[in-house]
Image (cartoon, rainbow, N blue to C red; front, top):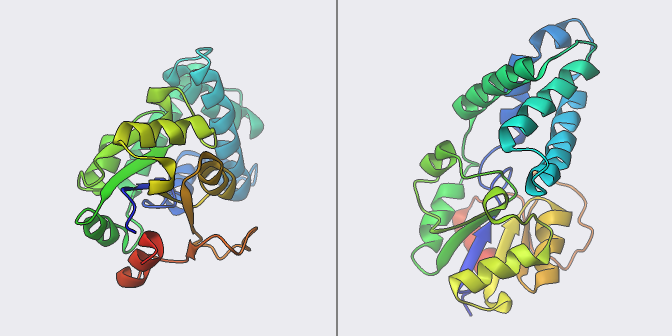
Length: 232
C-alpha cells in the first residue's frame, strides 16, 4: 500500500551538508586552519554541537536566532585562541552562510525521486533547521508541499510530537507515513517512536544499529530507491 505521505529530512538526506559545511568552514577559518590552531574535523564537530545546543536555547526563547548564530561563531573563534565579540561572530556567520548557499547542492538522484514520488503521494520535509531557507526551496524546485521546520513550530526531532504534528497536518495517521533521513537517533528512532515507517539514507556506509530498518546508500538507481521508500 502506497503511503499517503513521504517526509524527508534535509541535510545529508536531500541536500549535501557535510561537504558544503566543510567548504564554508574552510572559508571562514582559513587562517586558523593554516596556522594549525584547529582542524576541519574539530570545527565540524563544534559547529554541529553548538548548533544543537543553541537551537534548544532559541526554542526556549533564551536567544533569538541571530544572537545564537553570532554566539556559535564567537565560541568557535575563542576555541581557536582568538578573542571574539558577538559582532565578529555575526559577521563570520554571514560569510559562512554566503559560502554555504553558494556551495549547496542536491544529493544525486534526490530531485528525480521527489519528482516521481510527487506523482503518486504527498511529499514533505521535517527538519531541525531554524527556518525555511530560500536556497533550499530553490534547489528542491518547490516539490515538497509540506514543510515542518523546528524553528517555526517549536519542536525538534527526535521529539515524537513533531512527527505527529506533521502527519496530523497532512491528514493521515502515522502508519500511513514514511520518514526518510540520515540521522539514526533523530530521523529513524524519532519516526519509529512516533509510529511512522523509517527509511535510513546511509550514504556514508555506517553500520546499521538495526538491520530490520530499510536503508538506502544512494537514490540511484531511482527505481530501486522508490521501491524501498514506497515498500513496493
